[in-house]
Length: 271
Ligand code: HPA
Image (cartoon, rainbow, N blue to C red):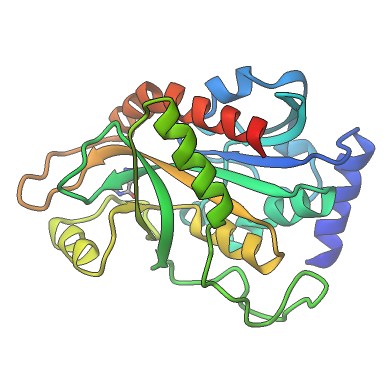
């Protein structure tokens, strides 16, 4: 694994990706507007990078974009990987390790998620304050590489409080409604049953999705401060559940994308 990570890192370094300060992972339906904010972009397709998985999901483009946002060097992933695609969690999180080795100091994550909190509505944003991992695996399973981090990484502050505090201040100043809550990661790819939504709510989840948690575990392992914002794309009320499909999820994500982009661009300026 170490060799693969180093080869991918060397390849990107040689392609001109030098000392990016901020890493960004763009989730389902959220990869367009933020990318437009990246000045002097250098675009590298995932399939040209050694050992990088490729995005198999519709609406995930599958390229790295390196450039400047508010004068800071940013490396963005337009499209991410999921466990349900068949990749191991080590593969899913390989880009996070590569980002850290390239020099990234802050990781900003986004995703589309189902809303479980009856006080909130689809289309709103949720700042992730904490998470529950219901994936049937962990990216740190197996041999631990001490050069990356400890065997038993602490998870008492998985989402950097300093970044979350700034995001809340920005949202307030810009009058963007930003809920705060617990994100639970499930395997997917099917959406959940009513009984599963009831269960997820009872165990303390405010939002549910199929990503983010593996990347956050690896970022914590490597001591890389991160934050994550979910776009709530559908209401998962077990007593009044309507069918949803990917097209609708992407449509709602697209509507909320300007707010998310504004939050992250302003955060990058403030870091
Ligand atoms: N579950 C339910 N709704 C969703 C999800 C999910 O994993 N992702 C986006 N909307």
